[in-house]
Amino acid sequence: MLRLGVIGCGRVTTMFHLRAIRDVNEVEVAAVSDVDEYRMREAATGCGAKAYRDYRELLSDPDIDGVAINTPPRLHEEMVLEALGSGKHVLCEKPLSETVEGCVNIKEAQHGSGLAVLPAHNYAFTPCLTRLTDLVDSGRVGGVRKLTIEFMNNLKTYRPQTDFRTTSGEGVVTDVLPHILSVSKQLAGTAVDVKELRWWCDDYTVCDNMETTLV
Image 1 (spheres, rainbow, N blue to C red):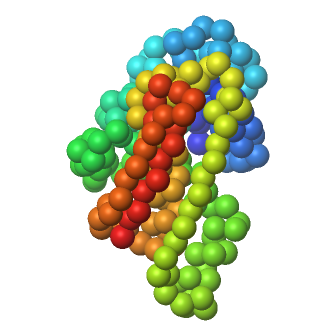
Image 2 (cartoon, rainbow, N blue to C red; image 1 turned 180 degrees about the horizontal axis):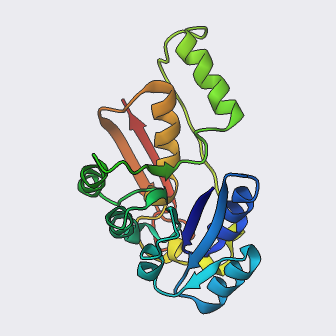
C-alpha cells in the first residue's frame, strides 16, 4: 500500500484527485496540506487523513511514501525539489516548472535517487488517446504529417478557489498548453521549433486565448 500525501486542497484535488484515488486499491491518502484551514480540514475529514498547514511538515512525515502536488504552477518546482530531498515519490500537476531550467533542476535532482517524478498529464492514459497512439505507432494510419488540436475550457467550473488562474501567472500558457504539448508529443514526437505564437486577453487580465504552430 502506497501512502500518499496531497499538497494543495483546491478544486482540482477535491473534484478529481481524491475521487480517482478512491478507485485505486494500492493507494491511500494518508495526509493532506493546505494554507486554507477550512479546505484542509474538509479534505482530511473526507478521506480520514492527517492534516498539515505547513507542507514541509507533511514532507517530514516518515509514514508518507509519495506526494501529489496540486498547487499553483509558481510553487511546483520548489515543492518537487523539496519532496525529492525528503525521499518522496512525486506526482505533480502540470507544469513541473514554469521554466526549462526548472525542469532540468528537477531532472538532475531525481536522477539516481530511485524516486519517481510524474507530471499529471491527464490525457496520457485515456482510452481514446492510447488507441490513437497504438494506431500511429503500428503504422496503420501512416506517418503524422499534421496535427491540429483545439482545446476549450471554462474556468468557472472550478469556482472561486482557483482565482489564481485568472489573475496571475501566464494564463493558458501554464494551464492549458501543457495538455496540448503532452498529446502532440505522444502522437507526433517532440516539437523542435515554434513557427507562430499569438495570444490575447478576452475575459481575464491574463492570457486566456492562444494560437501556436509547432514543427
